[in-house]
Length: 439
Image 1 (tube, rainbow, N blue to C red):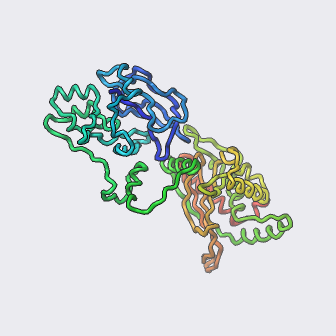
Image 2 (cartoon, helix red, strand yellow):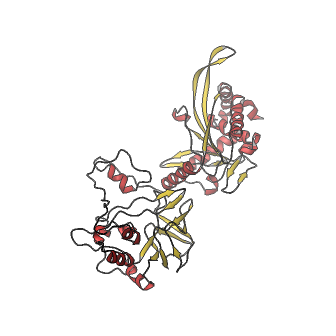
Image 3 (tube, one colour):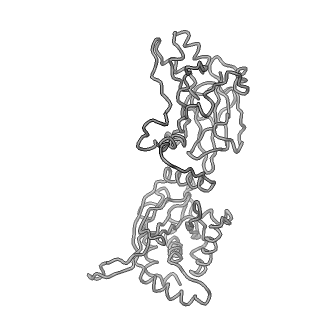
């Protein structure tokens, strides 16, 4: 019978997508590995490859269709010997529909695999007939070849969708022999030490089947964070630069300014100084004030600095635009407003999209140093640790200074090593000589 081409799961958390573009039309011949469509997920467009060979018999989902659920049929593939008249078997399954397609009886399918950055649909484990006499699923061509070669279909493990036996399975089989069959994983079997990369949700759950667990349903924010940061680590060539800044002068200036601002009900934080220092540094090193745009680099004139804000269930990165031109008190007031509305999820998209650079400060939680993941399309992100009293050598004498560790994560496609070093050095210089930020 004809083969359903299903909407693939192109990421571990994908539940639906948009069929952005068909690269084939009805009647086209396709081979395994041919790119047949472009599928758009929440934040990316990915290529979708054919698993089997045949002819596109019918396209079921039009281009531009959004909200197409994973595993929904989007097209029908005909193999040799099949015609459009056979497509009715898919749209109107008869009484012989397979029992193993029921969720409680179906062998779990493998998760989609990625090869060279392109999503591939994985073939399901064999749906071999059971002792109850379930129907054997094979293409008409596979049945004909098996009959000619004298091969029992029940002895063959199907590699097609849902374990369907296809032409290549029969051609590779030898008369009188039965290839080893892949058995579905059993919950009681010993679990591997760790889940394979890209393992399905069910496969991961089976590992912990004998442990007390609680499942947390993912909301839209957590799904987006998981997808965006997963893509960031896989696609952005990160490299890391580390420096420490002595904050003694900054802390003195901050104390003086905060005393003067008491009457206005304001209080500057160390993070306000970090934001300002970053904004000024981007002006000093303009080539680093840039983002990656796929086929080009876009340089920004103003310093639009994003700041990571933790909220329940995730985080936002509101953007302080034109930060280089704003006073410390203005930056502080604006940041408090954005952070407050971020925690209540009241930010408008234009308030958290954009920017070329981000600051992530975990020093307030006592974290001494860490490496942050770049938020695309930003060119860099500064990870800020806690200021710690540290013995340092100055003029051949050991003195105690308030030292803050910082790590600059850099997208090597946008910023090279020497350029990144100039940017980080400029940030440190402003932090260690804070009076210049008041000019």
